[in-house]
Length: 317
Length: 317
Image (cartoon, rainbow over all chains, first blue to last red; front, top):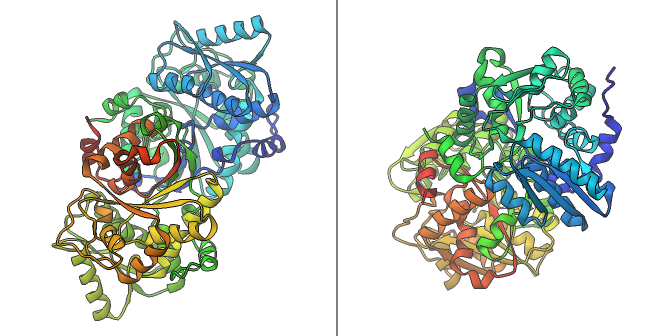
């Protein structure tokens, strides 16, 4: 019996308030990757929408509930774009706090979508503190990725689609950062397709949530060193960890080299530009080919917001 | 009153036999391209499926009607992949005839999908002759792209989706080769959304159908010189031209330089890998910015089958 904070009926209801542009994303077998990865590869593509990532599912739920007023979030760059998009559509006053070191492409898009952008020195955890300060000081809604249920249940709608679109999946690989996508999709899979193995994948250089999952208690890290900027947190949220412990069958770590190889394979064999976080699933297969050999593995391509020149560099041989 | 060979009721019926993996593809506004192109850009993305192009829509209709037996087609590389995919699923015996000069990525995928691949010297028109010879000699079904109604009506299902997904479109830009997509989508738009301007785009180096449209009679060319291999025909089909004359508001030509610039803009600003034919819409905007300024322009991204190294070369500055 699942006792996460999430609720399958609420997740189904979330679908009704999310702009359809974020829903029913493509899910297909990518034969061309199969000889390379030695398993059947399913792609669930979350990048073909106005914010090039899955975060719009959650921000739509938030913005719909909020209706009007002001809202602030910390973001590695994708949540901020999505909140700006959902907020612009509804006339919300959106502030995004991000690290100055975030990819230029992400920061540019946040500004272009009309949000106020505050940059902080330091990493994503510093941005979280600053966003909380702003929310307190101005008494406005703070959106906390992965802690706020809307972010998890929005992401969880991916799971509802996977159950329909990939009924023969053996494994679903989910990029693990704060945990909204992993707990959301994991909850739905455990509820509706319990035979599917749910494996979370985090960069070896930013392993806080994975270490926490393994030790069944919050483990923080001093630093997060990875090109996968979208999942580079250091302070796991206890409530999210509790949920993750119920829905994840495993949490694994991938080396940077596997992430860039994954990005290159997705570009060369699937024609997909992906940001590093979105290559974590392929990276996990590269790290442990035997584990996945011959199985039907679905990987969620969660974002494609990447600086073009950096992507060229990462994917060139 | 439209009197093309196509029928909107049959197009709606086609949807019911096409594998859902090819249907209801993403359609979204790409804000990031708008400052560059000075118009509102809608993307209709036909590449997130197992054959990375729209051709599966048509081959599903063909293969469903055929049921069993053998089939042969000439292909620049995309129809062949799609027919191989649809045929494999149903146990059909598929032969594809292609030019030896077709992109390696396309030829490899045709083989990998289990079709018999025959290569001919010369261009696509030579492959057409050879496919017709094989069909006659073995008394098997010849699939003729754009002439066979299934190919047009399959492609036309894109139009049904556009009418729903992009109701505010002012213009739809359609890559023009043999004409299946242009006549199919054009038919639906003229039937259901007659206010939308239908503009076909062909490479300046392979202009046969555009010249034919302009002169209202079949014009053939001696050669076809373009990187847009998917639309490089020289012998327009009279029946297809007759339909195109009814549904296209204009047919324009794009230079090679505009095609590669379009590919680069789609990569850098939309995160999309596209083959040259799929950049023709953006190329058309680049060729005549004033015409499109401030309008809502939808471009169909019809394929992404491109050799990775060639794509890198075309899109690097």
